[in-house]
Image (cartoon, rainbow, N blue to C red; front, side, top):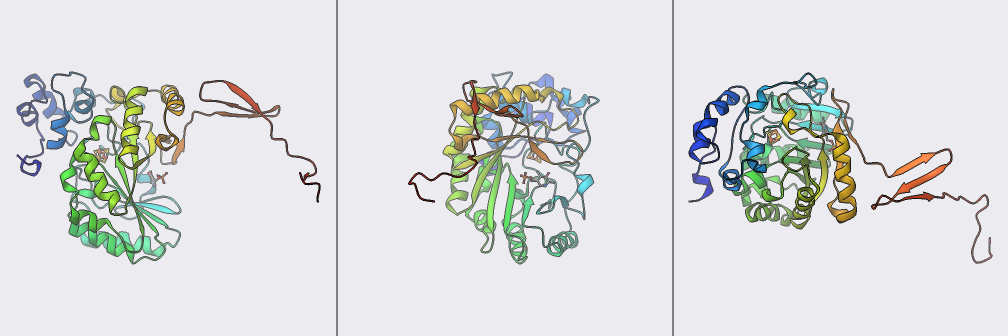
Length: 360
Ligand SMILES: *Cc1c(COP(=O)(O)O)cnc(C)c1O
Ligand code: SF4
């Protein structure tokens, strides 16, 4: 049976029938589904090990009653999209780049999604609204990069993606297009020759930001989908969310980052989890995240190192959160190596530059 012919699962009964949830979970899943969007694609179902009660794939996609518990520190709009929304579909927080969100649907719904209050809802931009969003981008010559997100913009039809590519291609100050997606992993069969052709631009550099959290997500089919994109000249980078019970140990992160680099996807960000409602069961501490990053630095190629970032609640931007290796004080500079040993570093700038060949 081909994956196209199998349907996406959206209810407790669907998930039980597929064997990825126990009958006793069905009612709880439906309770969560009444509050937050639920979708699990056939490719993801195939990745879940039903015999493992702590399966890291199931944990990301199968609803859990814990999602209905909201803690005091959680926020409906954790990264402040609203604070920087300009016209429908546009979030403009940094001068040189904007988010363009054509719609809010995804092929799967991650249980920890930072936009869980809006994903899976609404019809997306109308043709008139898309026109206004493009006008906004055209009217501000500082905008150098357009980041297409949502939802997952790669579930638009190739025809609509090509239309966006072409229309953005006519805006001369936009030099870079970046599509954020989970499609190559959760629905690799959607990465067809048509889709790849639609993403290619004749005038702009095109980047694909792949969201992947566990090494098992990089299946042969997912790697092949990435290869189709990279072979076509698109540059791939990755984003991973640090999640308790999914990838919050060094072994898993090591394997994930290696798998990405092997698939020619450059690790870009490791995100500290945003404080979206009902996600506290996925949370780890920043201190733990820094410890993991320190361990990765010693054991992994520089190519495989992501930057660990926190999106400051309220829309203040993503900032690297360490760990810090350099310590600058009045007394001087010291730096800690990957084995934890500290070395003093002398910035000995000579008063008068000397030459080694005796000439001035
Ligand atoms: C994440 C984000 C970006 C992109 O940030 P980079 O650090 O360039 O990856 C841009 N705008 C908004 C509003 C964002 O949330
Ligand atoms: S793919 Fe992204 S936007 Fe969609 S549910 Fe997952 S985290 Fe949210």
